[in-house]
Length: 67
Image (cartoon, rainbow, N blue to C red; front, side):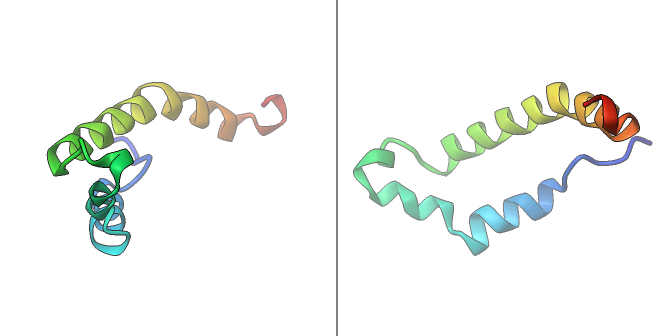
């Protein structure tokens, strides 16, 4: 089993419970967003992080002087 890059559970807790990211939708800049669209953005960011960044960070950890 591969080690985890980040904890999705903790990230969601921080964004939705601690920082109440959904409350941003009351501002004009974010009025077109809702909880569902924020979830889509979060999912895309997680896929990007796991798909592109994870392997790069692993390599950097193995060879820190070559980074």
